[in-house]
Image 1 (cartoon, rainbow, N blue to C red):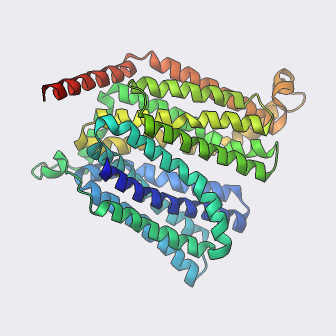
Image 2 (image 1 turned 180 degrees about the vertical axis):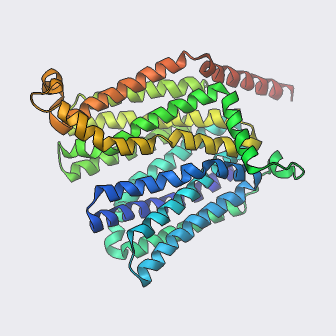
Image 3 (image 1 turned 90 degrees about the vertical axis):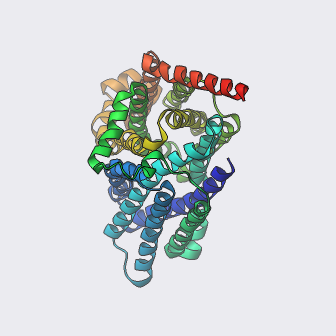
Length: 435
């Protein structure tokens, strides 16, 4: 665990720097253009390039040194940020330059994700994987708490240029944290006699997923829930602002980050349930239940409480899923499989970003307008117009999430993930007794 902690600490520092930049760029674009569409295009640039190149990134992570791939990804992201800072110092920053920088960072991220996850499974004993992934969930959530208020303090003092410089140097913190940690090579990296085309190696990753139905069903589950959360990312702000002020919105968003940090910390200390697949679905049902209650409340305090409870349990299910993938997938193919997993799991989120505006404007809000069927049936309970439509959709999201979790547990392939995990634990215990 010591080697993992060193790498994790460096990645955590780099994450804070990247979160500062993301927040500052969002503020810059909104202040410069006043356009939510331009801002949403940044979200697409953060997502799409990495997803498109994910299969290639997975092959490279398996084929080359994972340590070097992580260093290369940090360098790519760091010099991309430095380039934007240089433009600010010596010229005028254009929107297309921001989009290009964000796209390069997206590519760097899709290289780093499978490399980081595969390195964790190499450095951490299986019995500690739950705790290690809990720490990763904790660091991911901490960025959403630390970065916005810190950026709010720093922006008036050091401006956008200073934020970029901090981010640039934070990448070197990540690089130095892994530079002196020995990472064992995998079989594919050492078998120099094995010659395959990149397309053949991509196909191996896809074939592996198709042959392991339990992992494929688990991936389908996360793709669907990420699709739902794409709408949540868009609708939460207008829902809160319909009830209160921007200050209230800041309080609610801080509750989300605090919940994720608290959940990650508990998961890191606990390690999670023994039956990981059941844990994914069980904690999914709990999160979905509290999420459904958001739709039937009109008080900012009540909504904040239920959002906190819903997001508190998300790191539990996410960490259980990480352990399953790291335990089940052979080390030499993890890069390809993890990259494909990332691509498929996140592939529907841009779709929900694109659909959220038309869905709200053309269907949800008109359905809940005064005199319309939705308002007549549910208006007194959920409200009317935009807010009423969003509440109705939140209830639909929660119920869909619960039903999917329950239906998926009926699949024998999902139950088989836990059965295989339990057999493996027994074999490890027997081997330990023989020693």
